[in-house]
Amino acid sequence: MRARMSAETLTSELTRRIEEISGENLLKCYQCGMCAAGCPAAFAMDMLPSQAIRFLQLGLVEEVLNSDTPWLCAACQTCYARCPKGLDLSRIMEAIREIVLQERGDYIDLGDLSPRDLAEIPQQAFIACFRKYTA
Amino acid sequence: METSQLRIPYFPGCTLNTTAKGFDTSLRASAQALGVELVELPEWNCCGATFPLLADNILDLAGPASVLVAAREMGERLAVACTTCYNVLRRTNLAIQTDEDKRQKLNLFIEAQYEGDLQVLDFLQVLRDEVGFEKVARTVKRPLTGLKAAAYYGCMVLRPASEVAYDDPENPRALDDLLMALGAEPIEYAHKGECCGSYLAVVSAQAAAEMTYSILSSAQKNGAQLIATNCPLCQFNLDSQQAEIGRRHTGYQTIPVLYFSQLLGIALGLDADDFDWEKHSVDPRPVLELVEPR
Image 1 (cartoon, rainbow over the protein chains, first blue to last red):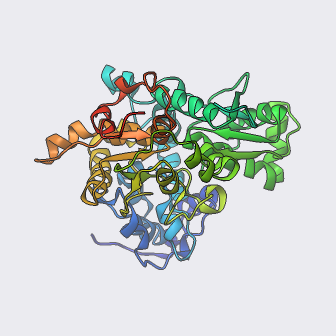
Image 2 (image 1 turned 30 degrees about the vertical axis):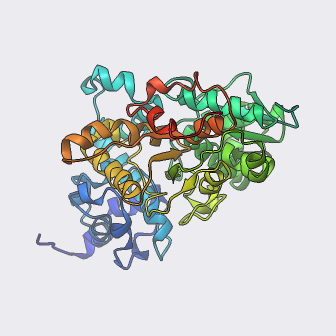
């Protein structure tokens, strides 16, 4: 895609907000790609974890807010364990989910869950989903 | 059966009361056989099932903090069976120990004076460090000789390492060493701590199926006849996704996924009838028949 960079986007309000609520410094990342290489869910994502960080560094937040990457992060923290700069991407993904949830509401609808799933899946998975995917 | 030597407060967590009953029954019976008395907290609540990752999310720590307060009233240590609960309780405890702002706000909110002076232990850690795998090996009555088992740790006892790990986070040994103490042959493979997809099973079944497939097939390629795990959500994902994996990957052969405590109970010669085998999607009993009877 074509990215337009400007002083405004590089220091956007939204980028600062993501840094503030995640507690992480986005500029630590030097794009080595270790997070993307180790992420067990990367194959299903439309944007690699390292790409998401790059978009955020460039102030292109909307691209990340519209990506499915934060919703496929299960916070396993393999990226954090292996990041040479100690960046905890799972916190950044949580911050992005939080912003999207506050703006757009719930990501999952309880009514969509099948009776079979409700009966069989351990309730800890549902509780986790309510915490991660509802506003 | 020997007399009780170790008495320790115990937090089973929600899942061990529902989908993972076999984990709870086999763990309690095995503990008793090893002289460990697990004293369940008289009152407890859900740990919250995930550790909140946002810097200012203190409210989500109130649930696990209440559990810690109840445990501290019982003693200085808490044994936890579910690895998710272990992860959440341990990290919450650490936050209370090290973050004065969080400690003050939480104590005000849950009306407690808790300082974080509790040791939160995973049950496998209790087995390794308090009971000792040597003692476990000496107590074995029905060795799992010839059984090739893949130890699967999941994420929760490994990451973040600085907060929760009691083992090498990239090359964990505790479960492998236990399997060896039981007489089984732990196999080496690359996916011992790879995420199984966790709660993605609810929102993205296809991603979860592929994530579990990479773990299961890696274990199988390295000769595993079964997988032994310490996490109730991993057990569910690895076990129940296999029907979907079979539809997606032609020629896929199923492999049973057990709680390590079920294998422990069998090796200790306990009656395994109430280990809740019916809950397993892939029935482990045919593989277990390879083990010599008591």
